[in-house]
Length: 521
Ligand code: FAD
Ligand code: FO1
Image (cartoon, rainbow, N blue to C red):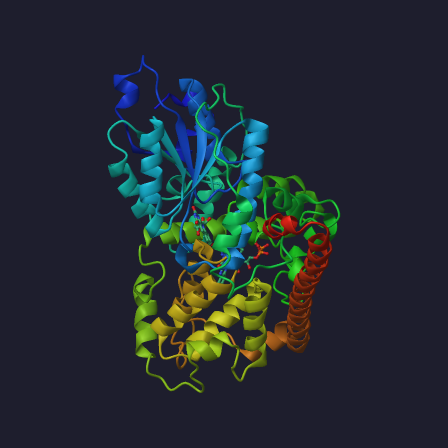
């Protein structure tokens, strides 16, 4: 490792997962390229892992490349999530290549194989990777460190959290109350502006990968059509910055920002929230950029900015803390002792309704408010944040015990939410069903001491009927547009074949030998 004074990024952001021998043994000889295995932080701008990879490459006078591994339907992802991610990556490749001359390799398969194989092929000296708290990813990294051989050094960079996870806290935190002051104390050191990404000094001289994005998307998106892509949220880092900073309608524009504090718990006003979670989840925008920009406009409405920063930094980073230090982050075993006990004490309590996963998935419950939230998620792809709590708590109320409730909530959340498969999602479900990061409340049937929410409480907070009507219209509009596109596609196919028939007839009369080229083109 270089000394801190020569680092482009704070040393606290870097963890050395493996110290390779090559730089020490062969320091005078030519070393291979630096490879950045991009996973969670899928962006060029404001990416500490990429900044570090380029910096290290320039210091060693070697090229740098970015490698991405496309898993076969990562954790059950469908078209909604995969389409969003791939479109973002297509834009990312273009920016990397055109603006920085950094090649982008996309491999398909298992990262534990594709990445070490690639490192071997190109004789890499350093593997840089971004950080994820999820257990599969940590296991892959351990395996990779064993597979890459003695020569390669492996650096992990926390490019997702404002305060690197391992710097913020070395243990499982009890709640926002216990992590908040730790994070706030470190913000002056870590909530700083990003340096400009350098252009690599030494260009990659190997083959430049050509990716047929259209074909790739056709292949990948053939499998997960059951959960279609969303239309309302444009993927990619350009759109992400527009969603944050756009002067007319970006979240930080005065009109939207000033209402965050008052509107964020009103499901009838989805624009009251930032709408940034799809971009944050796929790493198409940096939370640190969002925080810096929000802080710059704090004078517009200090309460709104402070509430936003609390969610964006404290709550989000608390979720990473939970998943990292509690390996059973998505199971009842991961709940605190008091919560497990109270849930088990009430596991056999009589429920007024018990629904199957299928009934819940189809929104076939007796509660129109819950059904509306489920439909908002299934069709729109993003349930309002306030409704997510009510939604998960009702699943606890209406299923055969907390384990089943948690597994159904996680299944539905990951299948339909555009921002699913995220520490925030695991912790959101664990908070609602297992009391994680919450306290005990007055004991009652089914819930025990877990915080309770009901229809009457929602009615006091917002216009429940208005929300139900809003979702009905929203879903109706989506279904109508889908039907029009399907009919449009059929008409286009029909027109195309009619035109082809006409052309065929004309040209056959003129010159019969031209039939084959026309059909194959
Ligand atoms: P904003 O209020 O504008 O928040 C800005 C950002 O702050 C969010 O994008 C998110 O990164 C962070 N944030 C906000 N609320 C929370 C929170 N409670 N915990 C941690 N971080 C937060 N969030 C996901 O990103 N993915 C999920 O799959 C997910 N599932 C959830 C499931 C349940 C049952 C619950 C109760 C919450 C879940 N959340 C999830 C957290 C929260 O509801 C969403 O982050 C938020 O609604 C996203 O919308 P937004 O970006 O417009 O929110
Ligand atoms: N990351 C990858 O490196 N390769 C993938 O194929 C991949 C697919 C994917 C699908 C849905 C989804 O929600 C996330 C996906 N991610 C993928 C990872 C992702 O960017 C997140 O960082 C993780 O879910 C961690 O929160």
